[in-house]
Amino acid sequence: MTGLLSGKVGFVTGAANGIGKGIASVLADEGAHVVISDLASAATEGHALVARITQSGGSAQFLPVDVTSLSDIETLVATTQSINGKIDFAVNNAGIGPKGTIAESDDKTWDLTNDINLKSVFRIMRATIKVMREQRSGSIVNISSVAGMTGLPTAGIYAATKHAIIGLTKTAAAENGEVNIRVNAVLPNAIKSKLLDGSSAEFIKTITDPQAIRRLGEPEEVGAAVAFLLSDKASFITGVSLPVDGGYLATN
Image 1 (cartoon, rainbow, N blue to C red):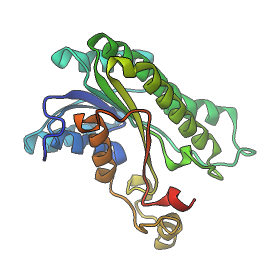
Image 2 (cartoon, helix red, strand yellow):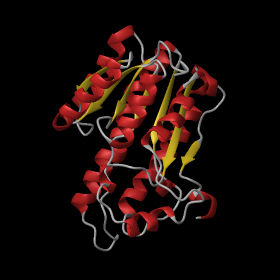
Image 3 (cartoon, helix red, strand yellow):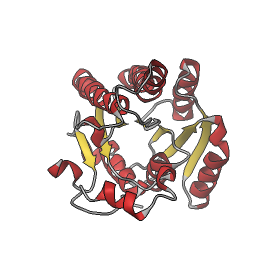
Image 4 (cartoon, helix red, strand yellow):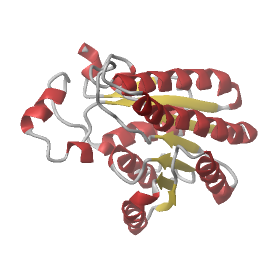
């Protein structure tokens, strides 16, 4: 722990498992109080993460949030602000990754993916930026994907939402820099998660071979990038899309 985020308060969505869990863990280890938000169905994992953080001397709490619910989003923002009267950071991580070609996909999948991956980011940013503009400070990191920079056969709807997140990130950065609010994106590629548990060695090789560093990334490696962007060490960085991809985008 280097204390990059000592005294700061904020939230991470989709934080009970996977990349979100890695992000929340690193932020807490860096001294932040983290509101770990996820679906009520992930409460067991969320509370377990809070226990792990507090046992290690950190500070966290779990809050059940469905990011497709506007009232839940409003509760998340209000709860976080109530802790010390401001919101220092927000991390939009919650998302899904349905498979299917564009020709095979249906409107239901389009609507659900956009509601979770994109509309929630817009709504959370809108509510959080209002608070941050009043306090004239804050930092937001949106989790996009390398699929926000490339086409992704069999996952076009997912890729569309991740492209759009980058557009929202750049626009919010341009609109709010004058009041000391920074907005950046992080773009993971092949990261260890429950989705990959039980996957064959052949499949893992397929997704890591295009990378310069041919292994799966750790969720905490994404968390380290997020922690830096949220910290005062990155005070002159806004509007960037930072790959955490083992070099995937260097050649693809």
